[in-house]
Image (cartoon, rainbow, N blue to C red; front, side, top):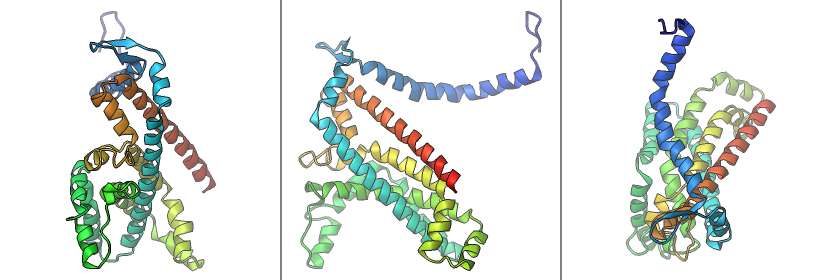
Length: 301
């Protein structure tokens, strides 16, 4: 392959060019869908909408306004609570179910159980919110109907400031736990049985077996599931918006709802962009910290 100036492309250079052309569509997709909006969020965080709809430069004023609002910090705190509860329950329940399914000897039964847990993951959080809003209904919901039949007082669930957050967490866990079961079970099935046999010979049984064999060998799967669950839980919006819209009395007002209201209800794109930048850096710091901790843990292993 000759060029007009007389230079000849080497074989390795031709392979690099061809490889770049194959990657180019995906790269352009990421630039358009992810990188460009991220750049726009940074740019708009230094601007605010003036009367008439025109954007004007305000510098760090939007950051000062957002970080001085009590509602922002309240929404951030409640997001952290939701994230911790949801991630902890999803990982713990998913791992426990995966261990139980691993001990099921018949593959048909195991596949049937896995299917039952995976099916809810196909339901969007929006649809799940509508379903559970009906299940939680104070008068006609399935749970309160059951409570009435056994003589237990009906509960308000989504209408109570204390019960609303655990109720929302349960919806998220119901949707997400099947994914963690699938990942953990795949990891367990990939562990050679000789490790468990050797541990049993050394006297490790029950919880000790999982503490010293299962968990260390599932570190990669635990890392992936925890990372994804933290990100999904921290960015929760649809289930809260559909089920409670932040109520009652702001008890479920999360960070993404704060962003949404500022962007589309109060028309403060600058403040909404500040929240988007804050979320980006928070998750970036979390991912870097988790990666360093996992590397240190692997070294210890």
